[in-house]
Image 1 (cartoon, rainbow, N blue to C red):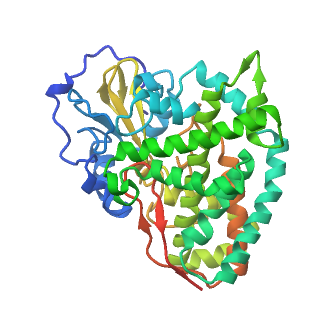
Image 2: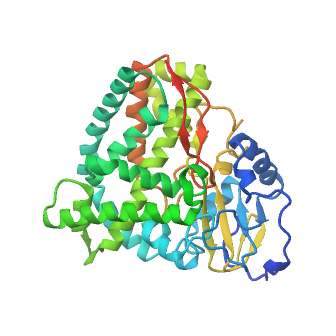
Length: 430
């Protein structure tokens, strides 16, 4: 097991440390397929599960003194670092959680509880969690079932074209918009803003400006504008939605500020849309490519779907990377990590770790156990919306498998970057 206690041994000065010959930081590495990237990850998992890497491409504020980061690719080390929140910081003042360097104010404006340490994280998470009451979950569960049915009805009526546009992007958008109280006329703006933020390293989203920073800032400004419109409306006229609950939430005298709510709105807009959207796309593609697994799920849906959902998440690994920063000297995977050094967790590698998953490139909906890290590696930052995501996946796959049994998917076109394993579009037939 990895050691995460403070370490009295002095680490090698970062400037004198050579970078690993297998590089995980370049644009060319992330332009490869997941299978191709895992060939490099597999070597590192076997031989150097914690390796020193050069700074990541796509940094929004390049630091000339930045010498690199520690890449953590093995499952046990990803879990250990995730749980050691007292040793590895997520806070913006320590660098936040994004792989590349991002200005601290932008992290504050968009990451909410994702980029907080204790005690602030615990207080804010309690306030946010209060809005995910059993009443809210019961209310949205029936909505999700109805929405999934309507989406597949439209899909059948339109005929097959692009699975992402017609199916996988619609349910999470519908659900999170309904939860937050986003009206129909603002939803297209919200999706465009989310795409700009997630795809700020992708030429298609950067557009004519050619500037990732401009693309990202534009997306943030749009989401903040939508959020503030809702906050102002709900403060004077509360309704039965999440924004109203967040405006009113209070625990032990603590309340959320408008800044807090706008930041959490950004987090939910991205996490609530992109993770389920991409898990749906990768999961349906896997079923299309593995007809034996599709038949097994179709024939035994209620019994098989819980395990299938976990395999969809492991297989797709929608979030590929997150970062932490060591606050004290520590040892991870037998390697000395000095206070102040960056540590990047590679979830897509951990979910293919041969020491944990037998034949990890076999898609198997009966895989048990399946301790994937698709919702995080445990600890205080474990995904708060995992239950909603599972509800969405169950409802949508039930509709697809029973009503569109001959659905087949073509090759996905992926979003460039090293954060989300995101699918832009994917042709389909039935």
